[in-house]
Length: 318
Length: 228
Image (cartoon, each protein chain N blue to C red):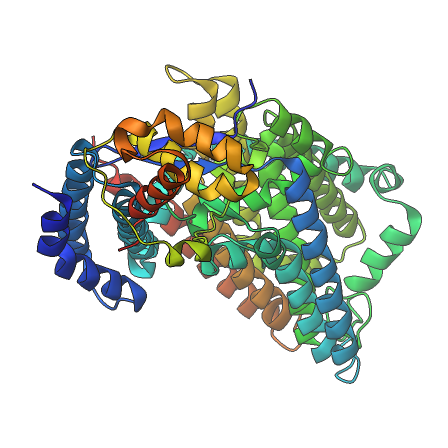
């Protein structure tokens, strides 16, 4: 077939597809896209095989490319299904990270317990972890006389603290995750020092008998915050482990696979830390709520977070 | 050998090709983005003062600071075809390693891992990683499966429109077509005698000699470029 004939035969279809690619598409048109893609691939192969001229080949090539991008853009958008994420993707990702979660949990909690016990028993031990001004600042924050608990200056509003917690906590979680790239060592260090830091504060404040301000304050948002930090540690360890032990695939492929697997964890961590920051700024800091209410709500929140975290197994197939 | 071409076969047996981009343009794009981020933060800090630095204003400012620090590249890469403003100026773009558009998850991973690429100072780890693989991927790119490519420009030389196209008498192989097109595109950089010398090699196709041969060849080239 001569090129001119081929062109006049298919000109209409090409123009139609070109026009449809110009305007943004709405709704599910993946079927049409896939059909067009196959048709254009065929036309392109014919044009190449019959040595039709370079301009036509380039035009068809660009059309195929544009269709390819459109087809895969559609795919990536459907993946952001919020309902499916909460129902299946996130719990399943948690389930698949279970061993990493266990390791991260131990690396956070064990140094915390040791440091906590130590600072509880020894008056000066807290100064080995924190310096003087930091200790005094924390003591002020949980002073039973304070109007707002957990704040350095009482004038700071709830909204300010919300912003503060968002910035700080999510940054810590992100760094904890990123540290996994250093074959997991960065992650382990972040977890270890955070555990030690939190443990020594808890031990020291318990020693001072600030029990009724400190624990009701942390119990509520701690459910989301501590769990999210452990999850970010698990995601980081997943990266590190994929480099250390790639199994049957190459180190690079193994790392890329890990990079795909941790994505739902990252989304989940961000959402959990936003909830935690909200609770910490608007709920935990209130000194007008009774301790019983705070413990009860805290227990309910912990139960919800743990129940949800353990719900992923049934989505695992095979 | 240094070859910046990156080729992927996509469904349908089609080969896609892209040019991966090295550290220098990426550094400039990053520097421009850094400037833009700095300006945004400066303006926001001015705006937040009237709202009270320890109150509403301070709170929103910290949230924006977080977004700009961590999510600025992610948001632009996902919603602006893989390009932050700096990358747009440098005509480079982030794309998945199968040359499909970058996804939210991949963009998150590559940008969160900047923290490690930055170590110990000024992206040293990232630079070393980039230079030690053929695709100029830093650690974040390796984990996310992403590449930075140059965005092709599809500008056709306007001067071609004045040439009357001529269909060749026989079908020609792709490399032959390409050489004729290149002859057309470069002919004004060559001297007259050199043009005639080159055209005389292809007398079998043009069936003309001397200046006419050159003219014929240019017309055939225009035909291959799609002028009708």
